[in-house]
Image (cartoon, rainbow, N blue to C red):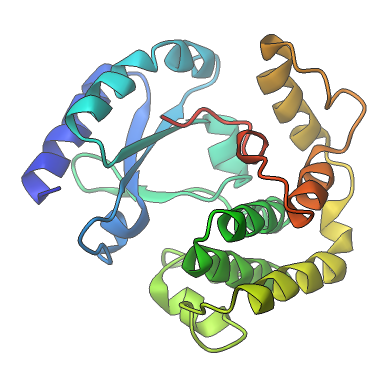
Length: 236
């Protein structure tokens, strides 16, 4: 995907969701993209417009047929502001925006994504998730720069490398960090609400009487590929 194609896709997405803020994130925003890297976009929706934007997700799907490497995630402003999902990205003019960072939520998400990556054979991604979980157990990271850059992963990897390929060792690290971070895995009303708002309209009521994240993590550790349950957020 050339820079010109990327800029064109960004402008089209912003035009499709004019009441939201569309940010380009990930390796493309950090300037660390390799050949074949996906283009990760985030649609940050103002209060009351998130569900409208999700109902218009067909616009993003149509653009994805033109640019298959495009990924679009719809994020409510409240999630962006609180940092329950960390985002750093640039708008179509190049201005940088950074969300808050809720260490508890990022830790839980890292465990889920790390185990899912192991199940799908992406050990490099799993190693980055383990590094993130490890960092969240320490002091809050420096927010003056984008948090999840290559330097961050290199500094926080247990092995000194974010490209570890030892699947068994990565799985052991994730299990170790889960045990050390028990305090981060207690009941969260925001997490419970996010899961139920996402799945109840799909007639899936399993999370009504569950603590969602620990439930998902345990099943991922057992080898159950529960990708649809990792994030209760719309991703195109």
